[in-house]
Image (cartoon, helix red, strand yellow):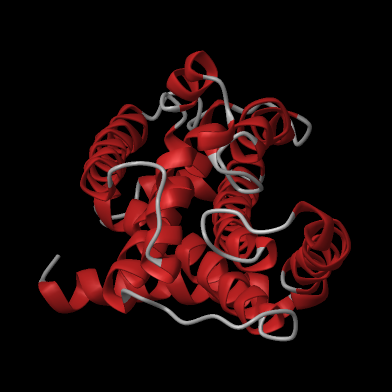
Length: 257
């Protein structure tokens, strides 16, 4: 395939993915916005006023970056895991794999589709946050870079989950038992400086902690971790996920029947 054909193949997959979540926007875009708005009201306005400042900011300002990142993570992941498993369940992924389209183009199309949904929800949540607090982005380029890389990583993680899932029930196992606990323990609602030394050290092993704090540094200019280390970890995980996803697509195991 020449460059034009590769681009058209990628664009076709991407447009299909975007149309998919836009077509059912009451299920894909509205519920995350309502959920995060409730977080804003309960944790920010009601409980936050009793907690007081954290990290040198009002509690509401402190939690907003974490809630935005949480929305991006869950929605970029959910978009790919549901879409790819649906294609696998209907056996349409087999037709795609035997087509002349390279597997890296297939992977890129599904990944950017997940990124698109994650960024759309992130933008909606950001706009909603302006009704509760003021945001002054300290490092715009870093903020955009972190949120984009994080969405890329969890989009590919969703594809890996979809490959190994045997039923629609299986696609909820990882979000329920792994993704959600790591997110809630990833410094979304608190600074790890509040933790005892032992648990602070344990928290450093949580990759989502580094993503949330890198994004918080981009927005507020404060972080509990070294931003360079956080970016390095994100890029390392992306590289590992990319090659593993390609391996799964190339092998065809659990995809071709």
